[in-house]
Structure formats: C-alpha cells, structure tokens
Length: 413
Image (tube, rainbow, N blue to C red; front, side):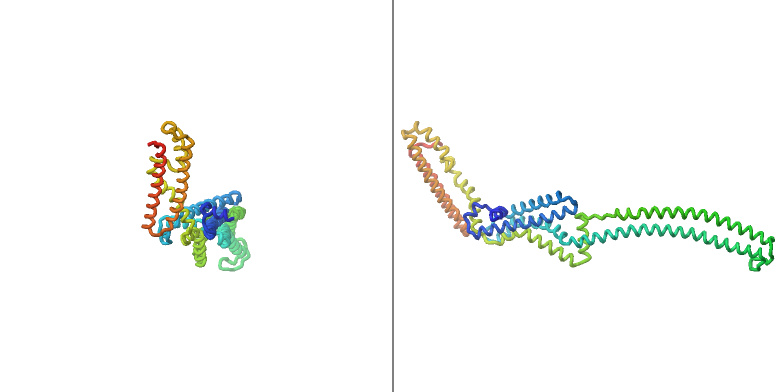
C-alpha cells in the first residue's frame, strides 16, 4: 500500500530510500490526496452518464476513464511541482498559480455532478411534479375541447327546445280556437272557422320548421358526439406520451429552479461545490504548505547535477575523455598505439590507465557528495563560491588525468 501511494504521488522511490521515515510518510500522504479526487471523479462521471443512458456497461467505464484522467492530471501537477526554500516563494511562483488554476478547474468539473447527486431526491421529486403537471395540462386541454363541444351541443339543443316551446305555444292557441276558449289570441268561436284555419296553417308551419331544425341539429349533435368519443380515445395515449427530459441538462435546470425557490438549497449547493473543489486542490495546497524536506534537496541535486556536470566537463571533452567514456575509447587507442610510439607493454598500459580511472571515480564520488550539500546553503553568495571551488577542483582533476596519461604516452588531439 505504501508503494502504491508513493506511485500515486509521483515521487521517486529511489530518492525516498535516502530520506527519513517521516519524509516517506509525507509523500505517501501526497499520494493519498491525489487518489481522493479521482475516486470522487469516478462517482461524479458515473452518475452524470447514468442520466443519459441506463446501460451500465457505458456509464461505468465512462466513470473509470474520467477517474483515470483526473488522477493523471493531479499526479502530474503534484509530481512536477518543485518546492523552494521558502513557502512565500512557492505561493508567488507562476508554476504554483498555473497548477492551482488547473486544479480549481478540475475541481469544479468534478464537483457539479456530485452536488446534483446530493440533491438527487429533490430533483427527482421536482421532475415527477413537472411530469404530473404536464399530464394535467394534457387532461385540461382535452377537457376544455370537450367542454367547447358540449357548449356547441347545448346551443343546438337549446335551438330545438326553443322551437318546441314555440310549437307548443301555437298548438295550444290552435286548440283553444277550435274549442272556443276565449283568450287574447282566440275569437272564442268554436269550430273550424277562418281564424282556426289560419292558426292551423301557422302551427303546421312551425311544426315543419321544428322537424327540419331537429333533423339538422341532431345530425350536428351526433357529429359532435363522435368528435368527443375520438378525443376521449386520444386522451390516454397523449397522457402516456408525456415524457419530460431527465438527462444531465434537465437536472441542472431543475437544480437552478430549486436554488431560486429555496435560498437554503443555493447555500448548500455552493458549500458543496466549494468543499469538493477544496478537496481537489488539497494535493498542491498541502505540498506548498509543508516544509521543504530532504527529498526535495536530493531531487533538486539529481536534476541539477547532470546540467552542472555537463557544464563542468564540456571544456575537457576535447582534451580528455572523462569517466565512463575514457574506458571505452582511451583504452582502445592506448592499446592500439602503444606498440608504435613507446616500448611499454599493453599490460602495463592497462594497469596504469585503470589506476588513473579508479582514482578519478573515487574523486567523482566524493565530488558529487560535496556538491549535493550546496543546495542546503541558503546564502546565495556562499553557495556560488562553493560551486566555483568545486568546479575548479574538477577541472584540475581532469588536467591531472591528462598529464598522467601524457607522461607515458602522447594523447591524441
């Protein structure tokens, strides 16, 4: 587990072997802090993708891939940040600011789905309410159409009723005229006189109009009844087809509506976002806040050493082939040319050369150990003077090697 957390932190295990136990624990802690945001990202993306598809073999791999991406970014951020001697310098450094901004960006991306997951029950309730409202709107629309049709039916039926009342009225007048009953509109003379005949003709006219009106209106009423039946048949399918979007965007919209309706929801939402963003920036933040340790000194030297060695050794490359290169090239040249220019046997040449190379390796080992101590010197002037002295010593060592070789054999230009 320790090795796994060290790997998560991106720290060099070989360099950590030379550090104290507390330094190892600190870097394992960095790995833990890098791992936490990636775990949160796994749940965040899995939830977000599950709102788009119900196929587990899609949203679970998507969550794993996103988790790996977040882990890789955070591991790169924490492993490439180099601490200076003072925390203030770290905070002001462009590398820290850039990494912090990037970590904040990743934090927001990870945080938003987790916030919606936290409010998932409230969002589901709101979506269910909206779906019910949409179904009620469909029912209301259908009922309104049926009510309009019933209103038209009532108008047609009222026309028939009105005409029936008129027919009954004139039927009564005609009957009274025939029976000799005195009223405002009868003569009181019984029998079928001129007045009775006129009232009979008018009554028959009204009766004919009633029949025609009843036929016409009843036909229209039948059509309206059929229309009502057709609308009622469409009612259930239309309600069944009511489907509101339940994807990530729809849930985000509902969350914003809940934030406007309930101030407490908005407060909790931003608190959770701030919390998850804070969790994601923990690795880089903790690395800046912790004190510089031996690992940072060793790492700085390991990265600084090759450059300084190249700078120090470059002037000597044209004169003497330095350690690791000399055994491969100088030996071959010495052995090849010795029988032409001197009487020294090849065995003697090899023995003298090996002795020179061994002394040079001992010197280089001591020189590197001394050079590693330079990074711990806080005074810049003293540190530069120390570097200059060591570089001069190394230059003298190379000159000494050249003189030693030239004592028994001329070295090629």
